[in-house]
Image (cartoon, rainbow over all chains, first blue to last red; front, side):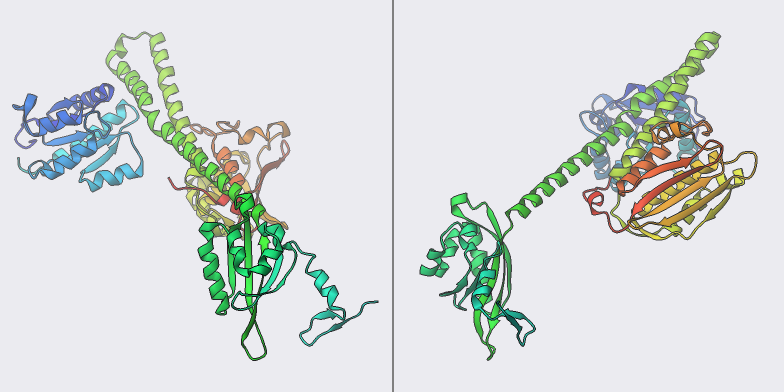
Length: 146
Length: 385
């Protein structure tokens, strides 16, 4: 964690390579040491979280950034599965998506997402989001123990 | 000369009872009277056949035979009403008749028990009216309602596509042009820099336009039903929201006594806000900007006016002012100019009209009407996003 100087492990589940890269760049330019892992769909997201298949040797993430609309398994299902698993449930999940529809927001919170962020309109917006994320979650909030 | 007299129940009755009988033929309704047990016909005018498609003679043989002329699915409710009527309950029902016409005739029956002096039911009397045409109108209304629903559905779809699906490609363009500038900017010459600026600005304008279109479509997708709304209260709320702008321009605003109107509260607020904002931005720049808000009580509607002491709008430009994406000469930066288009759509939704009275150099008055009484036609069939 940030206190021990270890990089923060972040899982980004995002099927749009353009958006994935923007997020990645924003974190690279960020202030906190981090390892960003990117998966492209819900199936890989669950494999990563459960540390199985191709992701056996990966560390459990400290934070999950989740896009709602992904192929194979969408963000809703991932949220549900995270919620069903007592170990995974402790990991903060931030839904990062382009839908501003109210029903999507309510549904996200009902499924225990920790926060819902609309995708920014341009790159500097992504940087702002990362900055806020860093300030709030990584410095101020005490993360649940692994 | 036939004569008449007023009887003790305050009716005018002709001396010759045949005249009264003639009267019962001068109606399109089937007038009838049965014995309380429905076994005898006491009276029936000649309209029976026109409506039920069976000759009156069949009724005399067996009064309950008219049930055969009733649509099979409706018979049970007709029998139930007949039994209730025998028990003293007035009847009021609609059902289908005329087997020869495939039971396509709709009728409306209203009937009452007739009491004698001792309080017993002496007869059952009523009329049967052909309401086929009214039913057709109702069906058409239903079709129109469905069409309106479908139209709203397409609008919502459009709004969703505009606001949602278009954001992603827009984000790609904006963001990557941005990144190009950051990471390769020092390798660009002035020409490339300029290309970049055009691209970025274009993307920014596209985003504003998409959001404006979404706002415009919300006039219908987020429409509320009309309610009694205090226009004075709504105006004050709009004025407060524009506090800063008013202070910036040192504008002076006067308001008359605004009435209670039948409207969508939020939308009326938008109208006041848009017009007020527009007037403040265009009002007198050299002196004190003055905005005067008044209302005139017309027979069928309230006519509101928002007048400024600005440069005025020439007649040939007045219609264009309400177009989507139109920007006035004095418009402040960042304005896509859709406020007035939305204002017009809202006023139209309320069944009103909006127009400008102005001459160059003489200020401009934006006038709009809100009809009195609930405007049901436009208020129905709307949905919430």
